[in-house]
Image 1: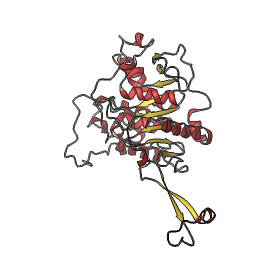
Image 2: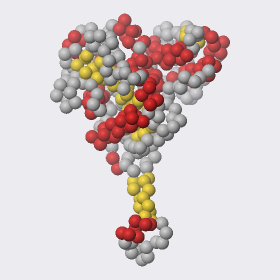
Image 3: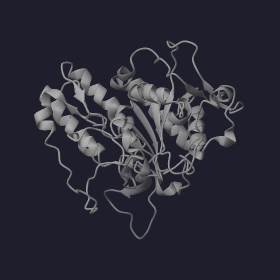
Image 4: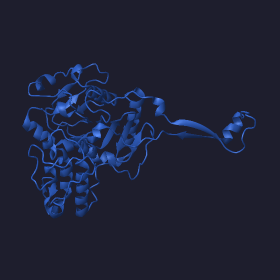
Length: 362
């Protein structure tokens, strides 16, 4: 899935979106976005220079960048710390990057981009203040990214974005059908007759429109999906594209559902107040089925979406996963064992939220 052909198809989807989808372009605004506090500079497109951590000299530095959505997993991946941040501003050794990071850098280069935002490298992991500051704006980071690379198939950094697969299993199959008078006795029709009676149809392998994989079981990824303007996802056997106007993959390379496509992000602009609350409770129901390594991340991992809804509920106050003006209804949450796991909801070992909030229970 990291082949030249697949990357050329991804370029086509991106170009089509930029040229024909004004609603996607308006999400980013007319100007290039302000870069996050730190990004990884992937260097020249030919890979002649190793990546390094780029810290803009001005907080108003504008440039397009890519964001990565991935599973950390149990294996230790490369991180920026107080001890390594200076060295990484000069060079990040290629061999130290996980397979997922290497593949993501490769995609960034092949799609003619210079910068990529990767959480473990762009947030100083042993500096609590930096983590709190950057996690608070993570929603903006994904929203402003030119597109997001989703390593959907990988449960950790060792598995990478790219998958080996049989390309014939994904390629549409051309069938030549003859209509009207059938050739007799196995006689092959002349070219002129064939042109008049032959029609070609393409049979596509059935594949769900969206990528699936371990990535989408993770709670942090929920708002990354919801807020990203464009997503290029690497699944088990296929690459997928999703934006506000088009869903496509290698089975359906021309795209489908160009109108009326609903992304995970709730469309909030035209919602009335009551509907916004309903949307929020739907978000909570879906989000709370996903897994977290750290229970204390339960509210921070949803803060970007909460901030988006709060912009529409200007006179309301967001309190521990609920809304003050709809608190009577918000307090009516319960924890049914909807997945029949036999595991009861329980308080986490660490304090996460007040007991009256849904976020207080695992």
